[in-house]
Image 1: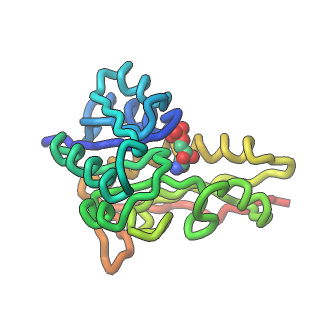
Image 2: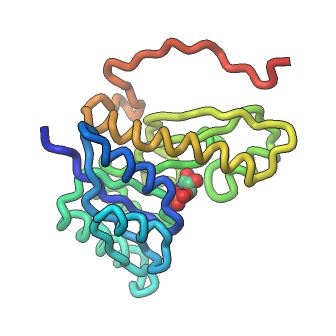
Length: 216
Ligand code: GRF
């Protein structure tokens, strides 16, 4: 079967991109990365893509008069490359409603919290401040509102006594690296179904028990 063609948008170090590169290199993985785009020329993720032999393109947002013009260029570059699913992976630009509509149900993001909690920047600081016992990550379809949209997959990690933002971020990042490839796999396998903006997973199985933190 033909592999789903991914376009990955980054702005920085690209560890989630790396997780996708590693997953797509596995035989039988149902998706492949066609193009990596960064809005920043110095994004570390560009080197990761090049090392894997994946096409890259830098589209500096500063060269465009406004968000609409930038997003239009982004959209046509993705379309011309034959991209079928756009994965935001640490892409630090707010996208216009027009872009979200162009790629409706074909645009996903990973966010380092259990949405709808702790949207926006500094989600780790927000989680620590709220004193939650669990945080985690969320992969979701993108809608025009920031960090909103149907939730595809989440992973929870404990927040431990003594955690600072770096410790919590590192624990969540490990979960992110497992979640993003899994979400892409589920989509590529056609197992993600949207019903009234709620995601159903076809043939999903759950055999878990409640998680408690602290166990006491
Ligand atoms: C990740 O924490 C992701 O959830 C958020 O930005 C960070 C990107 O990290 N959207 P990386 O560039 O993938 O390492």
